Image 1 (cartoon, chains in turn blue, orange):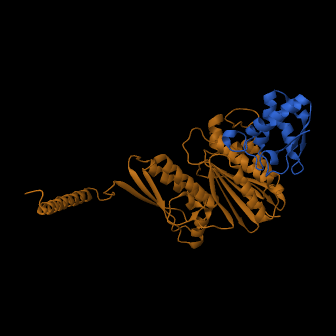
Image 2 (cartoon, each protein chain N blue to C red):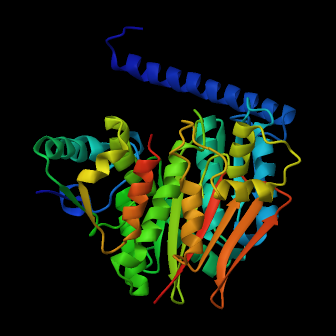
Image 3 (cartoon, one colour):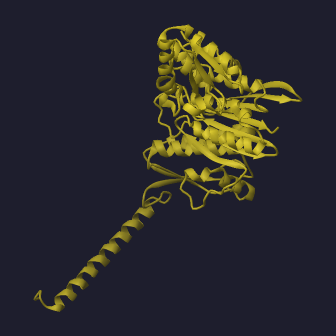
Amino acid sequence: MIEINIARDYAKAPGPRLKKQGKYSGEEFRESILKPKYELAKKNNEAITIILDGTYGYFDSFLEESFGGLARDFKSKDILKLFKFVSNEDPTLISKIQDYVSNAL
Amino acid sequence: MNKKKPQYNEWIKRRSNKIWIKRLKREQIRRQMIQQNNPKKNRKKNIEELAYKLPKTLSLINNFDEVITKIKQIKKQILNNTIKKKEIFLDMSETTSITVDALMYLLTFIKNTSYNFNNLINLSGNFPNDKSCANKVKQSGFLNYLVSNAKSEKSTENLYIKSGISVDSDFFAELCDFVQSKLNLKMIDTKKLYATLGEIVGNSNEHAYENNKIWSNWLIYASYKNNLVRIVILDSGFGILETVRKKFFIDALTPDESILKSAFSGKFNRSMTKKEYRNRGLPAIVGYAKERAFKSLTLLTNNVEYKCFFNNGKMEESCKTYKESMEGTLYYIEIAGG
């Protein structure tokens, strides 16, 4: 099972949407961690667990660029089928991500 | 005279002194003549000296029109004949009440003037005579951005004014830590604050201006008093209303308040990229306020003030229009302790 703990594997203080806007961006997260793991999961038909807890919070633009951007990269709204989200601190994040992916294309 | 003799060197010295004395006398006469012809200007450097008394209540939230009028007056003088050098003195001596939002706005004005006019404009000032006001200036971090004989004073009750161009998530984390420690809250309680900071500064960074020569995109200040943390954020761009009017060709008859409310609802695609999935920042900020993430949210942009606050558990909203218009957008967020 593939796991991405954003606070541990990327940043405790996730940043803005784009790399040019600042550090720990959603664009960088998608390119360096999310997309490679997704491709691996898709190849092996595995699930990916995303742990959203443990950070200071998320900018909406970070989440949109990460997951919405992934949907735009693969031109598919079905990317979330491989994902399982853990967000006990802020459960609303999961529905936000679903919303971003469905409006991404 | 024989040049090898010691008397020759002495003669050379006496002769040089005479030449030097003659030059000095000529220079003195020249200066006297200039003084007689140009009595009002700085004779040596031909610099125009101007002094402006700042308002007694130096606060945008409490005295918006007067403060903006004064700053516009100073700007007008600066732009009037930019060939001459000017020394402008900002007199704060009679100021008896200050809020840091006005200091931040003043700082942006000072730095942008220096940035855009290089050596033509020299801005200076003084502290208020009122001790508590003077302390507020020193403890705010205002002096950190200026050349001053006085130094900033540290206080445990506030963070210094912080400025930046890019989105600084490390600083937002530090700000959340400050809020948590002062109000005895946990990280989970400041998640919406963190998201709001990111949206405001992200908007400032991406949408507010196009190729505009500017010192800093945003400034943030936080202070604690009476179980309340107040965060002030200045987005030093054009302001929400001006940006929306320009980009979407809104006619002048449309009331400012309705434009602002439409912007909060996400009606205008303010995004420079014109992409549907963008333009979520402003609605998100107001949304968090309405979800009681904060005790109150006040927004001052151009000539409109919007407030969203909770009174006896009930949410209230208000809008107010001013005579004057500021550049940029000011956000005030109040967070109460548990």
